[in-house]
Each structure stands twice: as structure tokens, then as C-alpha cells.
Length: 338
Image 1 (cartoon, rainbow, N blue to C red):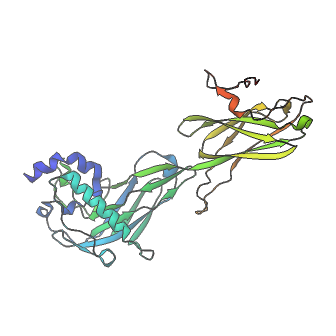
Image 2 (cartoon, one colour; image 1 turned 135 degrees about the vertical axis):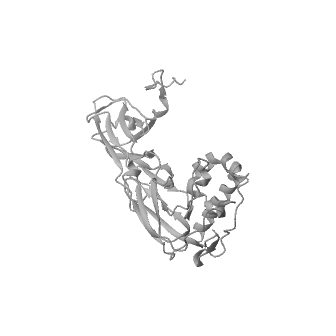
Image 3 (tube, rainbow, N blue to C red; image 1 turned 90 degrees about the vertical axis):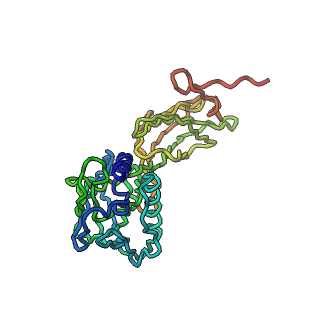
């Protein structure tokens, strides 16, 4: 009866793998006695195909939450006293998994600033192995990882040593596995959650000379075409207004890091000409991790204009640019006023 019930949840067990301490499932004690003096190991592997993450150094910390006796009963260590480690019924595997997930979260909350990990391993190319572990229950905690364009967070795990594959429903035997490796179909897969980092773009403008006729102000309008790393596109419009010759700038905030941008001056006032390159390209550098010392330099593009000799004014025209059928911004002359 128990075997039938576990087979019904085999897909679930494969999905959550070692987030579920299998020792606590009903019937686990049907396996042979645990060799509590055995030396254990865990092989870690990062799922997904993010090249940035795979090229990063990923620290994984293990904390011993509980010891285990020959019958599979847990006794909490001092740092985790009070954590509920009672047996969880496998009648509803989803509920059981949720319970152990909550316990992993609670275990992490019990960590203090001076709590030393039992073992630490740094993953390279998304893989790493920690050896010399005693039997018991371990909290696997992976701190946030910051790469040039993303941050990655990881859900805490509770992993039991030893475990067995009997509960996979694939005809595996009930031998205890002390070395959690791919070879034993029991490696621990860490599943990262990817978060986009952001950066800013500064548009610098130098106006060499200014048409002071009638005290006219001059507005310059810029189109910023953004292509993100995942090939999404966005267009933003910004402006700078001058009442005299000089320098000014505008900052475009919160652009996904790694994005390629092309900035074009699409309106150069009514009596000014662009004397620098148009269609300037830049790559957005993340600047959202200043406290961690991982903020990069802000991307900057620059434009220079000078008066072309005409006396036309050109002020406050940003809202006169509208998208046409080709997704290009076009200048629309304001309606005449009576």
C-alpha cells in the first residue's frame, strides 16, 4: 500500500529531489539501519543555462541542523533547537514538501551573524562537491550571487544524509546513499531565480553658442532605442532645454543592465545644427549594487550643437513627437493658436 502511494507522487519526488528529507517518510525505517559513523558527501549542480551564473564563483554553505540515529530519527543541534523535525506524513506529498520547505525557511531564520557553517564549497562552472560530512540533516544556504547584469537568489534546502532512491518510484532499491552524486542519481540541484540589474544612461549636451534673439529658449529632443539582453525593445524620448550657451545633461533611469542603446538627436531646436556624431551607441552598466561595491560606471553619450544663423525659436517640443506606423517618432507641428 505504501509503495503504491509513493509511486503516485513519483513525479513530485523527482521534482523536489533533496529538498524533501526522505528519512522522514513513512516506511523509510524499512531500510537497513543507518551507519551513523559513515562519511558522506554532496555534489551540487546549478540548473539552467545562464552563462553569467556559470562563470561566477558561487558559495554554498552547509549547516548541520540535526544528527540522525540508526532508525532515522533526528535530534536538533544547539543552533537549531526548537526547529520542528517531527515526522511528516507522505499521504499528501505536496503538503509534505510544503512543510519541509517551510522548515528550511525557518532554519535559515535561526542563523545568527556568528553562526559558522559546517562546510562551505564554492561552485565553479556551476558544479562543486563537499566531502567529509557526518550523517544528519543539513541546511543548504546559498547567498545572493551578483554578476555584471543579474543577481541570483536561491531557495534554502534541507538535505538528509544519508538518503535513498526507493521513493523515486523507478524500481530503485532501498539502500542508503551516503554520497549524493549524479552517479547515484542523488546530486543536489540548486535552482536559481534570476533578477535583472539596472543602470542609467547620461546624455550630455554642449551648446557652443545660443540664439538670444527675443530671448528664445532652445529644446533638443533625443530618441533612445533600447535592446535588452533577451532581445526586448523599448524606445524612450527625452529632452534638454537651453536658455544660454553651455553644458547640460539628462539621466535616463532604470535601464536593464547589458542593454544596447542607440541615442539619436531627432530635434535640434529650430535654428541649431548637430556638429557631433548622431546615432551614438552605448552599453548599459549596472549601478544598483553600490553598497556591495559592485556598481559600474554610468554609460554616457555626448552631443554638440551650434547656432546655424537662423532666428527661429524651438522650445518645449517633446510632446509634439508621436509614433508613426513604422514605430518611429515624428515631429508634429503644434496647432496654430488664435
